[in-house]
Length: 573
Image (cartoon, rainbow, N blue to C red):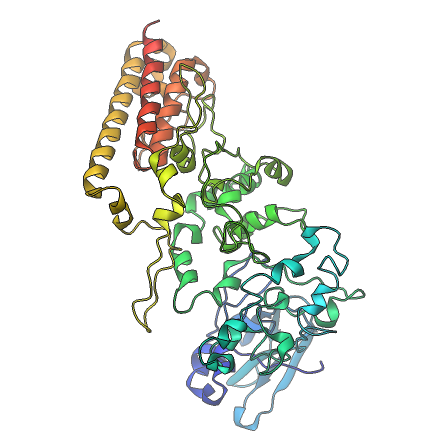
């Protein structure tokens, strides 16, 4: 086995001298009970990701255990792969650890362990990681992943790009002030590579200073050489970033985790797991709702989309918005700018190739997902998706009797410098040394303070605008209901009544939460006149934006006026 590392839990590693006070809740397995620390799933279910400072922790861990009829079944593993070996000890004071069972080379494995006494402490050991061979640190990676090292295109030059990022300069930031943080053991795990781990940074080892490639990709060591047989880890799960980006002054990971971006909505999970349409929905829905799918679309290293189970585990992750390898013109290593005014919508994703053909990296970062999703007035199954916020902001959707219109950018789209981020990610400073500030990664509009620069009384104008748009929506529904009761074909009216104008699966305008009454079937949709289809399309675009005029009140009203004009044209026949 070579050099071995003993892991029961990360807490055990940090508090070796006080292990007895924590082992009972972290790693002490008896045949009467088993209490194990569980770790969250990642974009790759065959990998083990622990949220710890410093990125990828290659040390193995026990993941779970079950006890049945005197036999303990233990699942364990680690990022680096084997060989792994289980061991047990019945007398910790004596330090006599005994190997048990075969060795394993899978990243995750399960083994049945026989009874070895009334009480025993089990652990999993593995080969010690090796950082930065042969030249030390990220210089090893630069031999291939740089233009000078043979990279043929900028895409191969991640080392060159990384040199300009805050990650590369992370250790230098510890030297500010009196420089004491450069030896502060609470700072070093996130500002160096592998600190506190076998083979990792030790004070004075300049080759391993900063956040380097192996911090996030795992120690490649002798395995990832020209004659090696293993690729570095390509982990895109948010926990990888959260190990460091979750400390004072901002609990960025915790804010993200509690936000809608941090989870996959139950309805999306259901659709991705549908036995018939699930595989298509994994790409269609997951392109915005699943970190695993976003990783697949962005990476050239996998030809197979993730399965529904993997795609359902984690929402829009950090790398959906940030590029860890390079600085970008948008700042904060963001993949796209924070504002734009060009019309943009991306239809449902059916493959990685179709996604690349329609994706535009120059569009507002939030608009990459918060757009109308390619909704057309000819759609009949469902209303437009509840994501047209960017299109509403820049006034670039809908159908009009006078023909297509140029984008009608609202004042919020023109005057707020960073558009969506300007309101939804307002950063609040740290109140004191013991409480975190607010990084804005909850994406929640918490106050209207930012409105005061233009609006002396924000509440008044919000109430006025939303009340007016709600009233227009109500009137528009009345017009459509009136058409359904007086002008709709008899075949529609007799089956669906006032829902004769609706989609096959009506939205909330006809089906408030808890209501599931259907609209015209796919076949019956052919009886719905085009003018009515155009009217309902505009109506639902305003409804699905969800702000009822706050994003772009004039344009919302324009869409509803056009919807009324379409119904008037149909009523006049």
